Amino acid sequence: MTDKKASLQIPGQESVEFPIYSGTIGPDVIDVRSLTSKGVFTFDPGFVSTAACESKITYIDGNNGILLHRGYPIDQLAEQSDYLETCYLLLYGELPNKEEKESFVETIRYHTMVHDQINNLFNGFRRDAHPMAIMCGVVGALSAFYHDSLDINDEKHREIAAFRLIAKIPTLAAMSYKYSVGQPFMYPDNNLDYAANFLHMMFGTPCEDSNVNPILAKAMDRIFLLHADHEQNASTSTVRLTGSTGANPFACIAAGIAALWGPSHGGANEAVLDMLEEIGDESRIDEFVARAKDKNDPFRLMGFGHRVYKNFDPRAKVMKQTADEVLAELGLEDDPLLKIAKRLEQIALEDEYFVEKKLYPNVDFYSGIILKAIGIPTSMFTVIFAVGRTVGWIAHWHEMISGDFRIGRPRQLYTGSPQRDFTDISDR
Ligand code: CMC
Image (cartoon, rainbow, N blue to C red; front, side, top):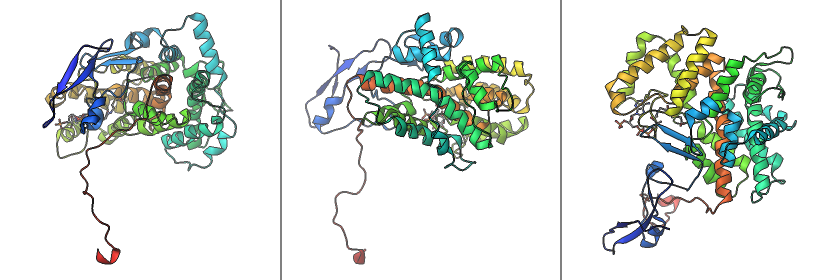
């Protein structure tokens, strides 16, 4: 409970008081739930000032560039932990001890294969289908495989759904790529770790050993880790909203994948590379920067800016370092596209427009560069974001279902026609 109160004066009514709650850290929130009884709503399109739920998973301080998972700073996790350990942390709230970690990794390994009938689903897609379109379909289809055996009110069932999703998403992601290039699907090789296994399923063939480069596997693991969760972003909020109806979790994650696909969210990493290709030459950078600054031109510099980070994106800092490591390992420092990226980054960091609006390179700017260097096709970039983010989605879904929740049901400011009588078609 709280002693702190906020008051609001609504014209023609007595002043109304609302309780103010404090989190562990971060801004206080004003509980406006009783406002509806006064006949008014709050208006916050884009949820700029609205806390839609209480959560213990992730904290972001956008002004100071801080991102904490269960209290641990993202840079410490990126440097000292690995993706699956971070998954455990997000799901269970604490870092695992040695036995817990081994058991978790083993469980995820156990679930990496997908039902053989899933293979048939792929044949329904055109070969040139975008892999994110395929992912929306096949992840949603998992609900058909596990619907009857899943009681979302049973904690054990929710845990198994989480294991299945984390384990199978890389397999499905690699399958969506293999399908698009007409190569046979690769079964997971459970002797490999999570990220190496994904690269094996992406680039291996039944005729040739995949020989996964450990430096690239480590970079891949870091990309997954840096995308693992990000508080109540658009796709996570979508998963929560879908889940609040009691829907099947595999269908909820498919909804999250759909929300992630857009270029303002996860689709930005793909859009960054498309933009670099469109720029094509360092001599054209100024022209594109000018377009990004022109209010009458809808063009934006993809990979720059963030709704919450107004100082720097702490994930981008680690990602930039990984990008340098990967480019050095592959001897790609002189790649023309990557040179454009570096020059663009430098110009935007110095340009008054970007500095004033606090538009810094975000995580997707550098992840696109690394993925391109690893040889991942551009259309797979957002799929890789989805693989990493699956744990965040499922952790938030689980947190919501475990606690008190109501169906999510926003209201609106109606500006349409007032009530009127239907007119017969002959009189219109
Ligand atoms: N290039 C040029 N101008 C920009 C950009 C950009 N990338 N981003 C924002 N602005 C300008 C925008 O025009 C506006 O100017 P004004 O105040 O004069 O109207 C101002 O900055 C504020 O922008 P906004 O659209 O109100 O900010 P937002 O918080 O609603 O949007 C964003 C955040 C990430 C959608 C936006 O910065 C953007 O479109 N960036 C490019 C896409 C991108 O990189 N997205 C990945 C985000 S990180 C990964 C993830 O979390 O999914």
